[in-house]
Image: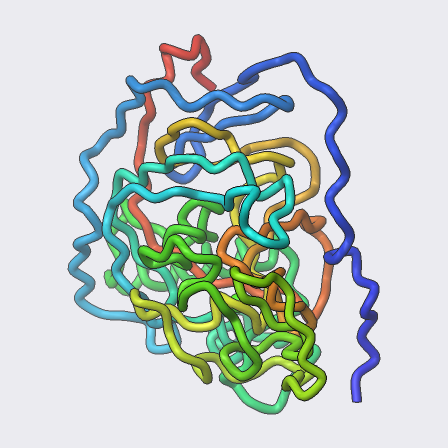
Length: 328
Ligand SMILES: [Ca+2]
């Protein structure tokens, strides 16, 4: 029933970066996150990074919501290990090195991928390939489209005094996304070490278990279309479809490796058009739906495999980056 192209660039291995000798090249502000630009080698943000104003750990009194706004889950501040170890079957080099990430603020994140109904209520169109149910995830949206949705939703709730000026919707950083996806899990999936047919919307012919790797299952289910959001079990923090259904845009520019070491509130401002997508999608094998798996995707690429979920987070106003010698 579909005419989609199974050879989408999404499934190509990321190009290995050219050798680089620079360390950090910039540290600037973006939506309240310490932004590190990488030139091959990564350095953690300075320990002296300071944020103003104080973040209130995600407690946000919202007197009202826009009726079609995404349902949100509260995510606490915390520390987690981002990425996967080389010992994890199907580990790709760009899933590492494992990095200790501190998220110093509480935030809110969509419990579901943004649906077509939610998109239409804000953007007045529906660009999706798979249609017929307003609870299907919106897809065929570029990174800029998704970002525009977040900003329009922010304005909509601010104008009706539902949202204070110091909070805004935006795409999740890659670190926020994995933190929320794992929901405390150190396994390959939020559910544990395995993703089997029927547990998520992916190509169930290719299951995965950490004790084995990829498992061929000719009887596995492959829907070959998006599913209405929330059809499968949530993770421990109440998020649905982080594994499969649509890939999800993240805020970050693509870097081949994770920063390594210990970092706080990281987001990559790597230049270029490639942005990070996470979670795997409806055409993917289970291995590509692991918590740690990540791919680059051109920001202007339009495909039925990629949607997004929103974050609602404090707009932190200043980061003290003097230790880095840069203030941009
Ligand atoms: Ca997803």
